[in-house]
Image (cartoon, rainbow, N blue to C red; front, side, top):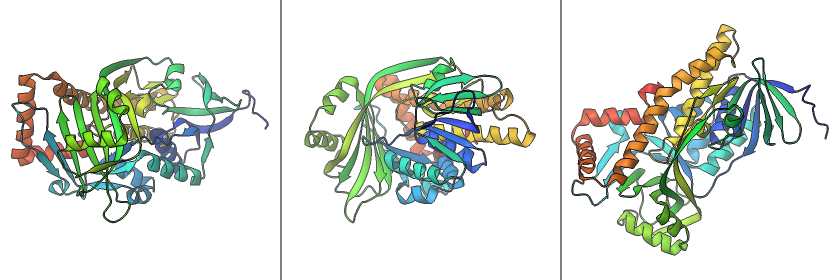
Amino acid sequence: MVRASPSSPKTCDVIVVGAGLAGAAAALGFARAGFAVTSCGEVERLGQGRTVALLGKSVDFFRELGVWDRIESAAAPMRTLRIVEDTGTLFAARPVEFDSAEIGLEAFGWNIENARLADILAESLAEAPNVLRVASKIDGFDFSPQRAELTTSDGRAFSARLVVGADGRASATRKAAGIGVRTHPYGQGAITVLLAHRRPHNDCSTEFHTRQGPFTLVPLPQLDAGSFRSSLVWVMSDAEAQRRSRLSDAALAHEIDDRTHGLLGEVRLEGERGVFPMVRQSVARLVGTRLALVGDAAHAFPPIGAQGLNLGLRDVQSLLKASHGARREGSDIGGDAPLARYAASRGADVAMRTAAVNALNMSLLADLAPVDAVRGLGLTALRAFGPLRRAVMREGVAPMLAR
């Protein structure tokens, strides 16, 4: 193999570092918009029982990219959302259900396995004519005012006007740009696993609010007639997460049965399970010289409320909008002005979503009567007042700050 020297790098418009879900979507979005794209990094097919619930704007984005039909065929709709207070508090509200038809939607979103979504995006990238896929790791970064130059672990060099950092929580791109990060561990862990169960889920996602965190069941497609499936994200203390990670499949299924109160009937674990620490992470800034951070490289928080990837995809959409604007004006897509527009467009949405997830999680952990009372009153108000309930549903699917 002949390696390109750093003095003669291969040029393109955009380099996307990271080929996870957010990175693949970013590469595909820029390619569909007519930019020459280099997509770097290995495709991440995270199994471990992980799924993603794609909400309104994410669905619209994948439609624009021309991949929604493939995704929809492998996903299950979430037509109803149910919240069940299960903390044992004296102020427990009755279960609250939200129906997507009440706000004129077919579904709030669609739930798909992470690995399947990764495959679909990788296949679409392989078909895109103006995308160069480079599986090698980027280990050299030079963010100069003129152009960014990156080098791979096998000695190849690439030059671009804009670098998109989509390489996750431990982002090497962010570190190379000198962008600081703050991390807050919650002392909790999340177990993720796919479940087969006897009773149908009826396209309903159910979230039990427990004293150690949410226990969330989300619909998945049937594999065959009479075989019902859901994904589970179970948030609990670190100690309980470690204990349950060591249980046999049968023993863990028994504890899941107990926590669901028989909602799905007898459950059985499918495939491998995952155990993840609950961490909130924020960055000092979203942009650097010729660099924009998206997805987990820009913000990370617990898997609560289906916000993680959906927030990352809104990052990508906002960055594409800023780049489109720069191109129309005849200006540099990696220049200070479009990057500043991107950062300004994302600040409020990221802050509000992070605060909402943090507030819900902390309210469950607090075990204080006044906090329980406020949470119970809020759920009661949502059940009783239609206009408030519909406003909350619309905001959850299509955040006003991201419109």
